[in-house]
Length: 70
Picture (cartoon, rainbow, N blue to C red):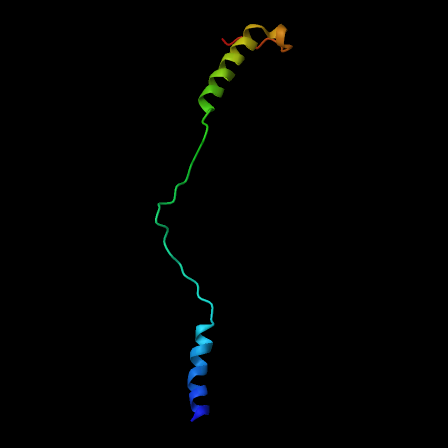
């Protein structure tokens, strides 16, 4: 009788010692902070202004004069 009781309780004890993993959804929404700098427009403007200055003063910047368009 005692052996039968031990055999019946042994699986319960082994099952109680197994680790458990719980997956729970967070209570707050996931926040993704996207700090993106967009500076393409500013760069294009500066580059165009710089090209105009270089074309207007080729000797100052050490470039040759561009060929005149017909």
